Structure formats: C-alpha cells, structure tokens
Image (cartoon, rainbow, N blue to C red; front, side, top):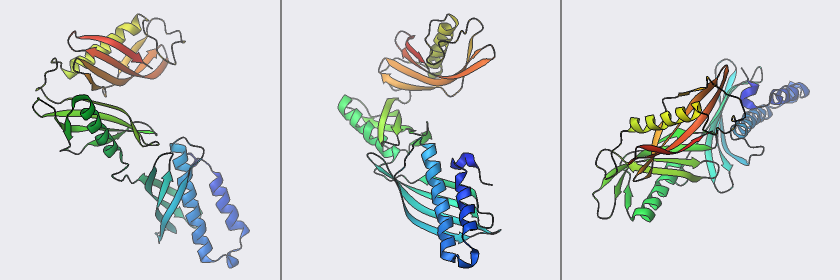
Length: 294
C-alpha cells in the first residue's frame, strides 16, 4: 500500500490517477503506460532521497531502467542513477514495485553504490594515513575490513583496526573511529588509539573510563552545575535523573587523554529528553577534565 510518509507527497498518486482518467485507454499506447510507470517510480525515489537528506532540490540523473512483470498485476522497476553534490557524485541503484491495476506504489527504495574513490571507508583510510604521517611520521596498513555505521542522514561512521608503523617503535594495532559527511564527501572527525595492552599510555580500563565520565555527569546534573543545550531553560529542579544507554564509546584524544561519547535519557518528573554527551578523561589523574551535554 502506498504511504505518503515514505514518498513525502500524496500528489504523486493523484497525478497518476488523473493521467489514467484523462487519457482514454483505446488511445493510450503500451509504451506510454510503461513510461508513466517508470516516471512514477523515479519521482518517488527523488522525493524519498530529498526528504531523507533534508534537501529542497536534488540534482539527479537516471542512467538505466529495467521493467519486469510480477504476479498479481504488479510490475518491478529497477535501475541506476547518479546524485550530484557540491564536490562529488554518488551512484545509486533503485527499485520499485507498482500495482499497475490500481496505480499504487507498494514499495520503493534506493541504495548508494560507493566506489573506491568516494566511499566512506576509503576517505577514512586516506585521512588516517595522512594524520599518522603528519603527526608521528608513521605508516598505516589495513589488514582487516573496517565496518560502517549510520550516524544521521548526512553522516556515516567508519571504525576498525589498522597496523601503525611508527619511527623507533614496534608495530602495533590501533583502533580508529571516523565520521564522514556523505553529502560533501569529506571526513569531519577522526580518532585513533592503541588496541590491546602493549602501549606506553597510562593503563585504564575502558569501562572504568566510561564510569568516570558518567558519574561526573550525574554529579553535575544533580547539583545543577552543567549547562544542557536546548533544555537549560526548563525548571528541572529536584528529582532530575539521567539514564545512560549502553552504547557509550571511547576514543583517542592524546597519549594521556581518552574521550567518551554516548547518549542518555534525562528525566524530570513526567518530562524526558534525549541528550548526547561527551567527556574528556585524564588517564594519569583519573579525573574528568571536560564535559559537554546537549
């Protein structure tokens, strides 16, 4: 069943029904029917993509299309297209399922086809190589496949393990975490830290680092010592509490500092708000030196 939430505008259905009503079937050739169905599919993909990326205008070129009949009076539409951004072009594949009898779209979706020149993984790998070369005069090898994860409609994360070859130091695996702006095709944030126990950095358990950060936030919130972006004007008063989610991550800042980031639910009475937090932990002192909650 067609959903106006998915396609952003129910006017697409109206257009299709109007076209079928105005054009008498005896004068409407089969080629025109096929073109109308393809146009409906491609328009739905443009609307969905623009809505997901928060854009009013979309520069999109459709390169190919394939039509094939399905059971129950439905037809499958598949093809490839290109979306032009400010500094890059991203290929994608799309497909729709349309009930030709009723003129309704039952399914439409798209998937970006990253190539080696513009993929988030390649962008992050290149950025890590440049960072290690600049900061430590070292080399980086990737012996394991990194993983990507969604951050938002405009950002994608990449994390994995890389082997660093540093001057006058034994080779060692490092964990890295990277954020890519997929609209602009560039890295906006990257961090890396030693993997395992063979490190000259002060020893610190990951869970202990997270606990230090979260305990510090609890204390600051209970004593009203923290500025929470967007909800500071609300009179939270006593009874305010924060519940941390389990998806907290640590990230490398420097040899003596580790970062923690995650999300939580802030409650005051019957009111709840989701917040994101980030801490900086001094590994030598075992203290939290900076906190940001928003």
